[in-house]
Length: 465
Image (cartoon, rainbow, N blue to C red; front, top):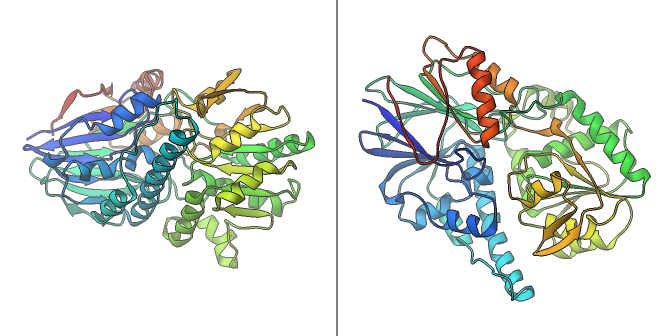
């Protein structure tokens, strides 16, 4: 009996992860993330799910990033009544992400309706109450603990090394013995705080992240040095460093490196603002889930009873009035704020107030999807649109690829190369734009993979044992 799968999101694109696996007519959904792009398309694709939630037997969440978990409440609004399986840390992160998403959608709708009545404002897709109800459907399972699904498949989580609690999802049909793994977002080896991606058991098929399928990252060892250089250069000009950052994972890594830089007296003593209620709460979750840390963090901080996410001059900002005061001050500082792709949240206000000053630096430390404000900034367009208005981009834009939590094509080839070549029949490529997917397919074939297939959106693929 074959397993079939179809990608309803993140096929030949990066956001909106939704992958459906079917065996004997019963459906298992892996991830239900928010698509991010142009506003009208974003609203339509997130509001109208491309499948019937009532027909799904189980839902599995690979990790808690917005583009993987952000639209789970729409499942329940559509009639889904089953369980949502994840690791404990992923459940906590997803809870935070969904509540924050509901809050941002509500506030943005309210703000645009009041401040820009001539512009189209989109009503929230779901409410905070919907998000809370969704969390009640979660069942948490630790890494390497096999469990049965209502669809008849069996599931097991392996550490993906991407963000706190992230997992590679391994599904097996006990009748045929067919085993398929979905990487979610695969992390990089050697990253700070978290463990490296974990080796998998023998599998027949791999559905693989391709986000950086055509790029190589700078060595992670350079991250601390490069961050220090950007800060010193900007402060010397009297400017500010504005860092759009994902509240979960990237913000904690930045704070960790800033802590090390201050301890080494490698950057000036200046205020550092983490201006994101979600990032503040996520940092609290990081403190709770120390089981996900790699050993060096324990030795450097926890064994000495030091907080890796706190130091002098670091300010966690939750109050709106405090956030506004940051932009009223003019002295050099570092502002870390979400969202990471600059599509919502307080980062928009900081960019509005700072992109026009050539003394400032906009520091890009993560992937910016097509048709987002973050991509426009990363592409250094002369003007950028914020809240529907045009602003000249005079600030320096600096891109540091060292901070990416995604495996690059060399990491991906090494990871796939570690699988049993006698059993692995095919690698399906998702979570990448077309050029990234095409390049990774060639890289994997050159490395000896029998078949590497770019996944087309909505197309069904059969996975036979």
